[in-house]
Length: 214
Image (cartoon, rainbow, N blue to C red):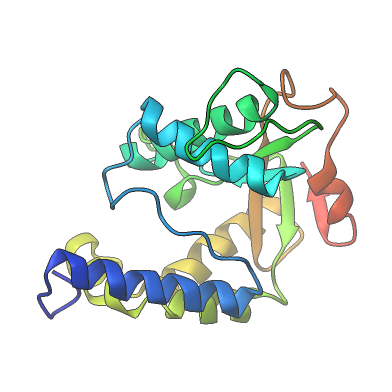
């Protein structure tokens, strides 16, 4: 099912890939193809090897990933894979798929807010770093709107009314947590051990003009 129209799996994959590429273009981001299908994200070695290859190719200074505790298991598995892939970036004896040479340098990992700004038990999760998105909220909405095939399905299956309205609602809630912004994103920094120095905080530095730490 893809909204109110039924498609076979290969058609849905093609549609959502094109939607994701369009959203990346809206944001000026580089698109990377998905490694597995929806819900089929498991913390397993074959997927880790493939993701680690991407991390080595990109050699990022900052990794932004899911919350470690979220309402869906595949979200949490995506987080675990991203953290480990970042960790093994510099391990010469860890073999990636396809093979990619290990990379040196520090990387800082940050976790986004869980969906709903709450953990699976309903506890409110407060970020450590707030990023003012008031001026970017319309750009975020435009990028999210590219995922048209999911709108009707989300409306009906999860009662989200409109996922575009939900974006504004959740960003407003984080903004209220900051006590400063109308709309905001929230981030928490992963423990530095094995990734970077104890005082490294490049996301805060990069967004010093629009961020406010709790």
